Image (cartoon, rainbow, N blue to C red):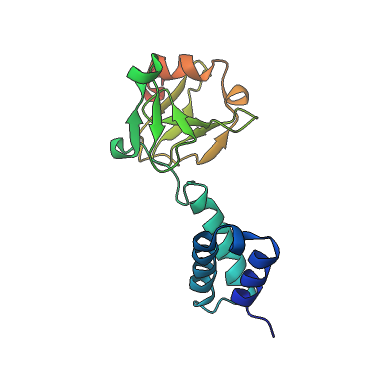
Amino acid sequence: MTTLVDHARRELALSGQIDEDPAYAAAVTATVAAFSSYGHSGGSAEAAVAQLVRLLNFEHLAPLTTDPDEWEDQSERSGVPMWQNRRNPRAISIDRGRTYRLVDDETGTMHVSQDMAYCKCPEGQCLCLYPMPDLAVQRGPVDYAAAAPVDVAEAVSVRRCCQEAR
């Protein structure tokens, strides 16, 4: 039976990579050997490959947060208030990481950082984004348009607490 390392060497040779750049081919082969050394089953290999792809694409595995060490201020360079996430450089925020968009996401989905709460006033007048440990946290993509009659930029600047409205 052919091992994964044997398969990698054969494919690298057939694609011309070994002849073209032996050091590159050796690095890829070493990576495959390191992966193989764990002794993955089919299920764990699939999960590990998915994680490796995300890591190699400089993506995050755990949810993003508002931790200031996680966000780099790019405002001076961009000329507008803007922060870029250090764990996933595709994540761009205009509110210091409370919400963010992924620059290559064609849907324009707004995401909420893990440690931020999302709530709607009873009157539906404002959309508040601020730490509220007593409320459930909305993680991942959020359809703001369906949640409240204001846009996200306005809601972030309003800073009106839903509890004040009650």
